[in-house]
Length: 270
Picture (cartoon, one colour):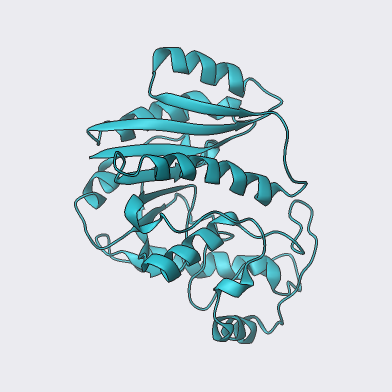
């Protein structure tokens, strides 16, 4: 039982040592593991850290990208994740599992491997992410009834409107029994594990892929938010052209392979 652990790295220097240490603990749950990273040109010492770590651990492979291919952040991140995904596809017979994770402050905290270890004994998920402490933070990647699409694409009348979604999912997570998984359409929260065979016919896409959602889902979200879908440029995200890359990845896997996307209420990093 092998696993490929992968993700994009850009300006992650302050966190890399601890994240890589956590990856070694995660890797110990498997017979063997490989780390595959896509490095985007950074303004810190991320590359130097990766080179030094590779000398210590030959399981690390990384690609160096010097130039962004798009002016949109999510498009570049999608390219990075797809690079890792292509490696997994090419080695599908070696890695029945793969992990996609971020290499920032979320995953550099203390690690409790027990929830992940228990999950590997379960058969009721194909893609599995976990809760985070002190609250569930990644509402952008999340698609769950009745918030199927990005909250950024529905009207926000004041600065606190997006917190409605955050409080909604946090309340749900706090009430899910410990050994119960919560089904959804998309979730990441900085770390997800996947059964490779269910994700061979999908890819990450940072573009707006509203075509992947049934119109009745969009209509339901419009009723709940009292807003038609909007396309607006924000400070760090251009909602006219960008969406979280995980949503398209998960929705395609559900459509093409019947993948079961789940969230565990348990916490890996705290």
